[in-house]
Image 1: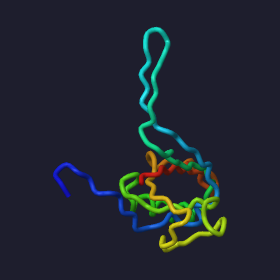
Image 2 (image 1 turned 90 degrees about the vertical axis):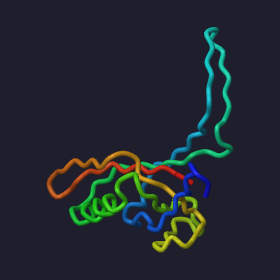
Image 3 (image 1 turned 90 degrees about the horizontal axis):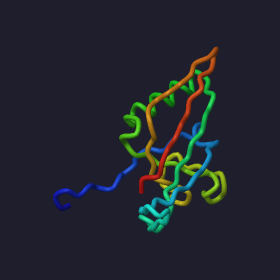
Length: 134
């Protein structure tokens, strides 16, 4: 590796299935845009493919909340990469591989943002967002 280069992310864990079941999937096509005073603009794609992201809001029981918070902290929030299986992209559909070996429908991702929870009686609401990194 040459000076100044960064190694690709190497996930070793998989987002637990209990947290992978319900996500909103979105795609962004990153672009460079120049806007001019006359209102015209020029646009150029920065990448040939879209960048995928997923988000969800979940009401979790105390045991699941504790497990997820531990998982989040183990990954140092958005710092360490992990694998996520998009249920609509796996083969067969809605299949999950807890080992991370299966590649179909598997994405290298990281968490987005900080840990936030709203606690009620016997439940906590948690917002989860992940973004593709490779």
